[in-house]
Length: 467
Image (cartoon, rainbow, N blue to C red; front, side):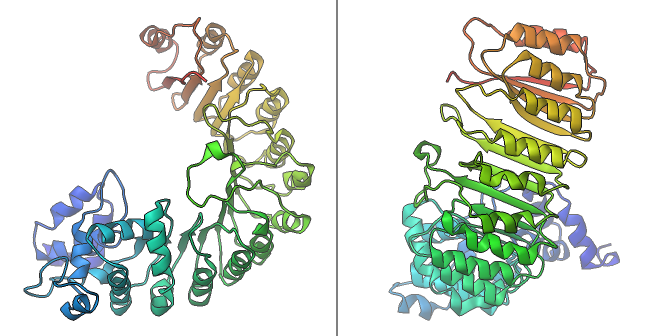
């Protein structure tokens, strides 16, 4: 029966299996099934997915392809990894497609690999003609960071593995500058569609700009934890304005309580006029995200509010419990929402504030102008705002509301209970701050809502810790 199907059909079927456990079961059926399953299992062996933890045997298997003499030259008195009595049944390194650099380094160090042996592993990848499609290079472990930086300087010896990259993540900062890495990728890879990066130095900014311009069709770009030198890559985005669909800015702030990342660059989100104008010309952007970015309330950014008329997703978030946003860019958000009111389907507004800003006008814009919204997440601090949202909720499929602790929760829940949803596809999640005068009895409330909402309706309640 196996011969009735070509290998590519088995490949398609196996990729639809829900878990790695199912794929491992295929190895036990027969040799033909194993031949089809092994390449899938080994194309992303360091990826953590579905609670699957990478096996420590992955690095040991790769080490089996390194000759004994290489270990002796590197100072080992014996080889490490799997002992070789015969060649491995498969050329396992050749299947590698996705590499998480920090997970790879962590596994290598756990198997007592020194810098020279790690470099030899990359040479093995190049020798077996590995063409990576995803390369994720990020670490927040200081000891791993230093080792990773030293290995990084040798990447010019095996540039061929980067020729087919479509996803490249080089975010946050290392002990050394990333100019060389950006230049290597720019020279050898021109098909990146999703690029995530961070810059701290002028040289990094210029090198990243060259990398951006060298790509044929960049679709997604994320700038993370960067400073004033972002002007170089942002101006380079003009060369990708015909293909660029998604832009994200993350972790550009000066709040030391908001991150524990090593080598974090504390800098607010400030752009020069040329950078803002360059970004505004990328009019095909349909997804825009700001996460933990300070300074967006400046009038300098107001021109962005009318630049994007085709947004389907808009996200703004800042802060956490006990970390507050005192400069919410209400004007910018309002303009962005109004400009894309006909296309917007996903809107996430998530902040923590002590000043209880008046966002009633923003809520009115959402309820009166955004016609096709399917997912809304928003913090509310008045019953009027809740009533506006709930009255116009019909197109929504998912609604998440954070109720400020100043709201009378009895009134809020009564409002929801007395105006039932009309669709069984809706999902509502309510979260609320600590209120010592209110004792929420979940079981009783579920009984109340069960008689009002459709049986398939999903209504959940979440109580936040006291702030």
